[in-house]
Amino acid sequence: MLRAPVSEQSEKKIPMIALVPLSLVIGSMTGIFGIGGGFLAIPILVIFFHTPQIKAAGTSLFIIAINCLTALIGRQSLWHEIDWKIPVLISISAITISILGSHQSSKVPTAILRKSFAFLLFAIAMFSVVETWFIS
Image 1 (cartoon, rainbow, N blue to C red):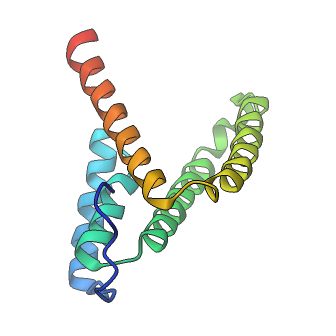
Image 2: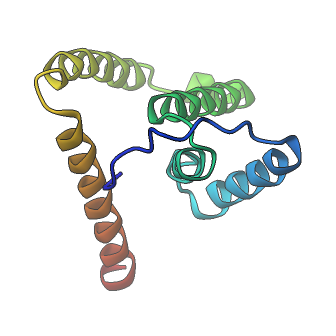
């Protein structure tokens, strides 16, 4: 994300022989370490397969939505224990903030947004490392 996106190279089709093991590795790391699959999938799609960043992000969000829906349906027996006000409030807040953010993002150059997000991810990673090693 700190580098400019690759634009001169055409998108490569991911061969099925590579897709299955790649998906298993990303899914395993997601499950073992509790990290989001998008943190692994997006860089792989963009760097190795020259997928446009917006398409890679959309793919990642679609996978997250499928995972969430699967988990929600799989835990249907626990639905009565959920205080539904909390997820509804979070959803409304997320939708509202994303709408406001999308309007504001058009006023900021893409390169600055991309680099700012990369630095935010680094800061979150450093916070997680410090919290894990020194606070726990």
